[in-house]
Length: 511
Image 1 (cartoon, helix red, strand yellow):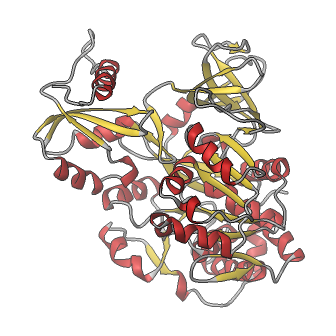
Image 2 (image 1 turned 30 degrees about the vertical axis):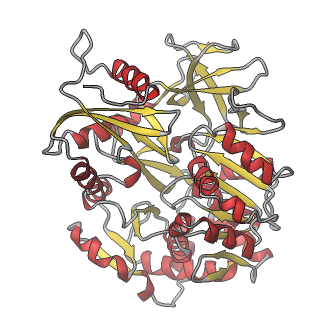
Image 3 (image 1 turned 30 degrees about the horizontal axis):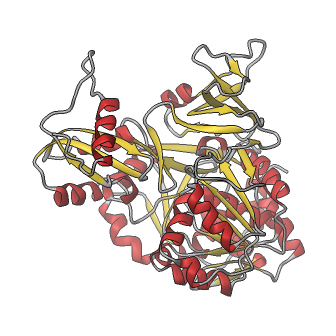
């Protein structure tokens, strides 16, 4: 297999009339999904030369998935850009991609025009019915398995987002193992929580296309009303949740499980950040017979590289293991001297090799060379590894255990965030002179310490114009000055220590 479209085409052969995907407005059979994708692909193939970015400027939906697959039929790669993002961030992404064509919907036209985009804008609803099989087949013959499939933008330390480019081969190699390890098949129904510009959704989409499971897209708006989420899960007999930890925790905190716990669910898989044991145990009390799985992995290695199927109870003092590497992926720990660590209890940086590695960062060779490097333990032949910047150690049980970030990158609300990017945006605000951010892991909050005029509401409003809401700090601390280290850098460690001490004593005034 060399193209993800082979998943769809094989499934259409087995289950043409089965519902392949549905959202709150519409549903589509697998055959209908293929036909609509071919229509879109036939239009695009006359506009592009292949292997170039085509932006989907829309929220997740059946129509967005049809657009993705249409782009793939045209031999291009898709990039979902969320219309709810601030105009400035959308412009940054467009500058990196330099797309020639954008697919969108009528309700997003006004926001798109505000970005200043001057290329071709096509309303997906106006793409006609003609399928040009000859053109599609010719483009497919030109394809190879290392062609790019999608690009997902993550936070960048310089204040500029990075586009992680993933190939067909990487997705095929991961999804084949993912569905096999966890036994996902045509009897399943996967309830999608993640936005389509977040790589958790890749597992939802391609697991369904491969196996013939049905994909149910739960709209973002539902998660403010947990009863609506649980109703949708029950109505569709959802069997599998592959969700961000933050979404599972939110649903529980808002008493969604007390309202209803649909018994169709038999797998609950989570990733994005460490799962609080208290939250895990509350979910397990409602689903004692379900499979619970802890997944780990950054976008750059195609979704996940390790997994742990929970096979026992955990107390609040214990860490949930990261577990072991997926088949056909190599995960190793390196120390500061680039030597591999195998001894339990010794912390090192998580590094990954294998065919699931990303192609790199789109239009960013400097950052690509920094993150995707030659394996320092292999001198005899070329072998790329991805240095995650995450820290872990082996336990006595042979499992990997997560030990935080090597730098100041964090996982918050299921998203990977560079604290330096938040600081860079903060310090560009007129009311802020100096800023430093850190993460309060216990409370799951981003804390911003700043020197400047105290106007929390104005700062929050200004930040929302520049970054997604998940990057807006949760706690604001005004200070007369930020402490410095001996070499003149902001003393982030001291700031955090002082904050935690005062927080534990009921005050966060650090001045």
